[in-house]
Length: 408
Image (cartoon, rainbow, N blue to C red):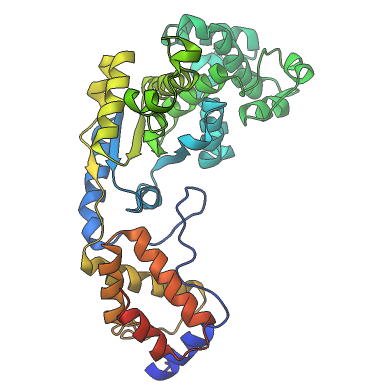
């Protein structure tokens, strides 16, 4: 094993390659984050898990200021609750093709084989395993489709009947028509199809049609062996773009153009909220939504009550994501440095190597905590800045540390 001083020298050499141990942290649901949860937040995670497991359908608000780690929490939940299909969604990016976007994310999460298993299970329930004369499987696609309609027709709204025909056709064709199986699988995977391809499958629309995507999503989630969590980030974006009426009148009153009716932005907001609430009709789907304040949650509750007061009862008490306490920064730093070295194939790490928090020190970390006021994002920004200086500056390490020990 390397002695302590040699280890420090090797670590500094690795850093000089220009790799910052803290640059990999991102506030996005697209890049996987493996680092675990700090100790002070483990009770919060337990609270989330208990709420999810004790409620088959619910809306769970997570409230935290900017930079407290709401998006990072998504990866912690996804890694810990691996027995759920967990989907990330940002409302800022999903105003068009709402259900199609969610469906595409769901398919990416579950994978092809589980998709095939679910549609196979559905067709079997619709009668594909019935036998005639005790020997042969029923292979009449039209008969199976009619069975399906009789069995599930009452679960859907009257305006969804055309889309339901497409969904049943896609599922039965995939399982029972070997000549069209590949094209039907493309449809199930959400590929965009032209009129000729849809006509070949005897369908009206592909899954870019919101009703089709919603019904397929409902079918798959309700028949999946795993539960499903939809993590909606920046949920307050539904209301945050609107000023108060007084503020509008100071600069611009939309009623000058649109009369006293709702403005286009307001109509778009209501449409998006209605679609989100429609997800509550899918059995087994739990929604986790992140917000910045109780005021935003109260405003959203008011909007929901105007659409469907019943859904208010599905909203659980909010869970609050607070800033770090001082002990958290030391644990966060140590965990991340160890993770950085392990992913850099640095296998011989002395047990005592981070007792002094090398290459920085306890005094620097304490100062970072005080200056950032415990905000995780600000802590991260400052650590990135410090390590950039260590990596790229020509100053001695002691001079760099002295600067950050005394910075204000």
